[in-house]
Structures are given as C-alpha cells and as structure tokens.
Length: 548
Picture 1: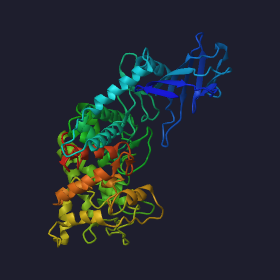
Picture 2: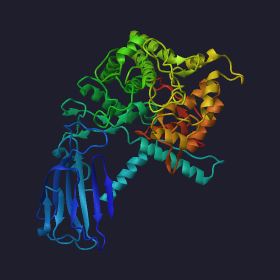
Picture 3: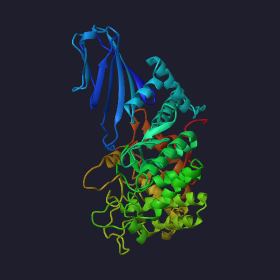
Picture 4: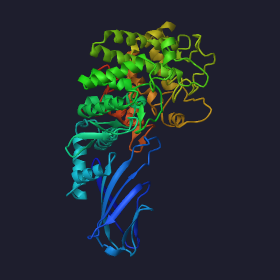
C-alpha cells in the first residue's frame, strides 16, 4: 500500500510492502544529476533534479529540484545491502526486505535549487508525521471551501442536497487548483521564485503565477476568485504582473504551463488584468505596470502581442488571408479586450486611451452580417467571404462555428440586440435576439468539418441544439437572454445546464484550468460576471440551494 500527504512544496510518502511482493528497489523516473548516500543509521538521502515537462512546455533553463530521505520504518534490510544506483536512479537492497516492512520517504521540492528544496522540506515537514500533514491539509482545504456556506430548503430531499453540495465543493476544490503559484520562501522568510518568463530564467523577488489559459479562464475563474477569494486573486494577479515585468518584451504569456504554450487565440490576459485594476485589487505600481501592458498590447504591434494587430488597426477587424484561421474569433476577442482596457483606462485616469478603446470595442459591428444575422469572415476588400455555412466549424471560428460565436458580445448586449432588430419585430412579439437565442437551443446539433474534434463530439453527446456547454465560447450565452428580453427563458436553460452538464460522474466537456467548475460555482449561487472588468455581477437563475 502507498500513502501520501503533501504540503505546498513537500510531502511524506509511506510504502508498506505486502506479503509475497519481494520488492527490493525504489526507482525514480525522469531524473538527472542524482546523488545519494546511505548513513550509519540506514537512512538514504537522494538529491537530484528533473527536466520532465507536461504535454506542453517548460523553459530549457528550468529544473525541478528535489531532495528525498528514505528510511525503513520497520522490517529494515541490513545496512550493507542498501545501495544507491545513480545511473539507473534507484535505491536497492540486495537482500529481500522482511514481509510487512515499511519505507517512509520525506520529499522536498523546489524550482530554485536543491538547497532551497532542503529548506522547503525542513520548514514544511520536519518533525511532522504523515497523519499530521494529512490533518493539516484537510483543515486548510476546509477553511477555503467553507467560505461558501449553503443549505437546502424544505422542498429538497436530503439526498439531493448532499449531491448538490458534493458537486459545489468539488467544483470549488478544482477551481482553486489554478492558477498555480511558483513562490518559495528563502532563509529570511522572503518570497522568491524562479522565473519561467525571463529570457535566461533566474531568481526574482515576489510571487509568480503559472498554469492559466486566459482564453478560457477570463470568463469565470477570475470573476469567481474576485467574488469569493479576493486575497487569493490578489496574489495571483501580482504574480502575473511580475511575469510581464520579467518577460523580455514586457508581454503577458497568454497560456503558460509554465513555458509559452502558444495555444488558443486573442489576448484575454488583458481582460483579467483590467478586471484587477477595476476591482481595486491591483494598485499603485502594480496597477501602473499592468495598465502599461494593456496599452502596449492594445495599441501597438508588439512582439508576442496580438496576432495580426496591424490588420486589426488598419481594417477594424482581422481579415481573411491565406493560411490564416480564427479571424472572426480574434476580432470578437479583441473587441472585448478593447472594452476591458477602456474600463481600466477610466480607473487610471487615461481618458484618451479609454475613448479610443471604447470606440474600437464596437468593431464587432463590422463583421456582423445584417442579412444572415451571424458574425462572418471578411476579406480586405470589406466583403464577406462568399461561401457561408452556419454549421461549419473551425476556419474563422476557434473551437466552434457561427452559432457558438453568434452572441459573442458580452460587453455590449444592448447594441447587439439593436443589431438584430434591423430585421424587424419577430412574429412572436419577442425580440429578434431572443428568437435567435431560442433557436440556438433547438437547432440540430450539426457540425460540418473535415475531421472530428472532441468539442463537436461532446456537444452532440452531452449538450443540446447548438448550445455547446462542453466548451467555453458559449458560457455567457444563457445570460444574454435577460438582455434580449426573455429572462425567464434564460433562467430555465441555466437551471437545465446546471443539472444536466455536471454530475457525480463528471462534466460535459473541457474543464480547462478550472473554468468549467467556476461557471458552475457562480451560476449555482445565482451570479455571473457577463463582462469581466465591468465590476458587476448579473443575477441568473435562482440558486441551487435554499440559502447561500
């Protein structure tokens, strides 16, 4: 059996060998520069590092340093039989350990150095048992989760309330895993970090954040943190400001893991930093540096900034071109980023920039087809791309199609409604925008593309109509119904999404750095930030619980 209890940077692992296993080694995989020794008491100390990375990237200079002390708690083999094999990264013993023997490993880690790993181990684990660390971890998580307190009402059964609470607190746990923090405390107790953003790496002061794909998480993760965990979001945003300070071009990595992933589109980190400024979480020098980045990204053709920015500035939209994709998605994302930047500019007292970005935030009107009533790809001559298929995925649309981007103006819903009204009043008496939203709920779940991607499969399997809750682009759509004049329909479908797209067996689709669960948390308590960086939360469906 294997037991593990962890702190932020260290852990204790206990391995008990069952009768008949005959195990004679412990091997470490994906390690380099391993050094080890056995002392007179039979305790083994291993010091090394690993360059192993996730499916994405890490900077070449970045290492994961570790120190491990290994000791038999019971049933120890003879001292002479214990050996450290550096070449094969393993500890072995030539004689079989007695049945029922137990090995305990104390593990310290660091992105800075092996000495820092030793310091982390001593500070976080020294003198504690596995059981105590496990208990302390439970208490820390309970403190975080208990910031949201819910109770059922008289109409709900005990089993229903238990299931809903399980879903809510599981979602909170998953959402709080991101963004991850790289900070460590030096000998003086001062926070430092190894930077994956600096050109040659290096150790810097203060917090540092990683593992956030802003295209996904700007929608719900940071609005949820602002609402429930302002202390945690403040630390995270300070970490991102440090990241752009350390970047050689002064730009924010739009998806770090912890290297530059280069995945997804837009510059949605601008929205997240603008939200921090508007909400008063980023202040002083941090707010100034964050706003300077927003201006640099929104107003210039910066290296590692907005893609095709020159064309966006020239035409007011990202035009179609050979071997160019995501043009509609980019334009709509840039409009939202412009609007968010305008809100930050107002707070910072830069009214000239606010006016420029506020006006530019309406550029979505340039790619809205009044006749088809969809957002469509445009060419440099100002004409829409001639061939249009409302069910065609990808191409100008990121991980979706025309339907998934049909209402992608969360910052200006009233203007979008007005754009739909060009076609006149619908026979039902409802607004045209409301009619189109309801049509989305009932349309066939058709997706035309050359090859299947998991987002289309999940939509057709779990969602309904063209409302693909399994992926991020539609997560604001049901809240747009209130602005289209059909709020009760919006509440109906919100309740349906909460009860059908989440459950004890999993979610309908992409979790992506806590975004799917953050949508559930916010919507489950009846609130949603339709336009992050507005400083406002919109009422949604009645909360899942009698009291929140």
